[in-house]
Image (cartoon, rainbow over all chains, first blue to last red):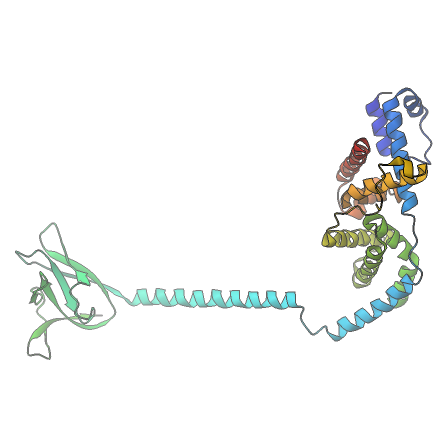
Length: 203
Length: 158
């Protein structure tokens, strides 16, 4: 018998102390000092393990278990309506998460409906001998820096502004100084200072 | 269930206590583990399927409970060892062997001890061990082989 076969035999043997050894195993142990030593060590180890841990439960432990179990169970049934701290924590977390998801959905829906309502309005006019043109109106608080126009290939000035439905007054500002009405728009609205603004209705 | 529970406690307290002691190595820990085990047995007795071996089922709970206690307390000290057996002159042969065994047990981890206890001391078959540990038979064999190798390695070191 080879040592590997002996190892396999030893692995299968779950009671090395009381099991009768196979004659071939016995023969191998007698002839192979390494396996013999291993077998003896193993046998001794298991015997000692059994011996030092062969204990009995302390007297009264069974009665104590029954008694304490009863007390513990009555306590848990009395307090069963209370949530454990771990459970409370997870419930709170879940509620926070749900609230967050709901508010995120509401925010996104609002934003989407807002953007649906906005209309894309194109302002286009041609001005000669100017370097910079911008549009001002009540939609941008008459601030000429907010909506600058860009020059197209055809030489006209163009701007795209998103506006909600309603009536708006506006003018163009050339080089940040000269205010001009929209030459393509015939609708004029009187302002409060005796002048006019161009008017635009967004439907 | 109360009468049934009493029967289980009376019948298996010794068995559970011994298993827990074999894994934890301390009487107080073994007592705690035994109590926790039976509390779980009471709580989950409905999960015991018809035809399932109740002894093995209790054994599974005891092993899991002992493992939890072991990990919770993070035992690093040698569990049984009180003296250093390297000085052979002070001890009788029996005590010397016993101390060596204790030293080896102290250096094994809980899984090694679990498989060794089940296979060599409780004399469970590989099939039963697979059922108790809820793993495959091959894994049980691998664990056993490794545990055996580890013990023999410790012997070589000592």
